Image 1 (cartoon, one colour):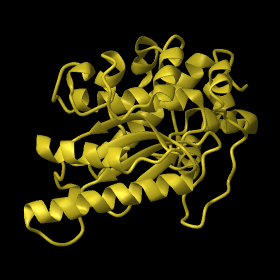
Image 2 (tube, one colour):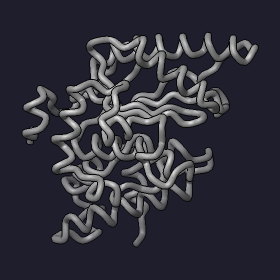
Image 3 (cartoon, one colour):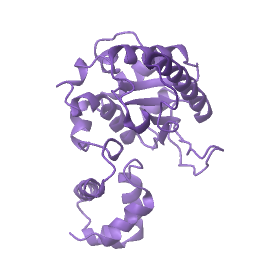
Image 4 (cartoon, helix red, strand yellow):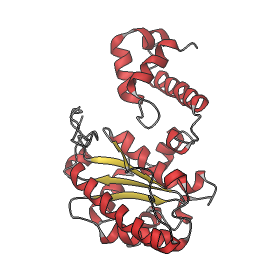
Length: 267
């Protein structure tokens, strides 16, 4: 069902498309994406306040009308963005930002070579629940990293722009959308549903973490479907499909891996 919020802002979720653009990125039917850029070899390329301010400057300078920032958080070695716009324009925007920052960083640090770990990562957002999970997850990064106790105390994220109505990278359309949506998707409702960490922020050895998150997905799904037993979830095709569509987070594992884990899972 297309929600009231998405319709009034001319933002909508439609049936998911498997169309892949020429660069291999999956398109989002909602035009929302969780975008991540990371320092090469996880180097702390945004370590100082000056580095973070420069990145903020380029995010503002390179902005285009068709791409809107709905959330951001600059950490010492990576950047999270919640963007809305056509994938092609997002790719061009991110290329411009990364190029500008790489030139600045290499000059400032008197170094040569790559600054970022490959190109940016983009994760299509196909549901409102996932959208709001990303929104709060992005703002909770400094809290998870124990940089601050509350997300509104961190200077280099959009949390302060929303809470204190500060001017920065967030446009008025995004402000109004978030303000309206928080009546339904409040922090108190969404944050308890989040895992403490995402696989994207973990070391390479993620087997144990994946297992823990997968177990949590099953627990949540069965709690929300009290009429189902685990056997129904594991064996019935319609339940397997709904479980994958409802709980899957592509940052953690692929759909194929999720279903394989479901087949092997033992309570």
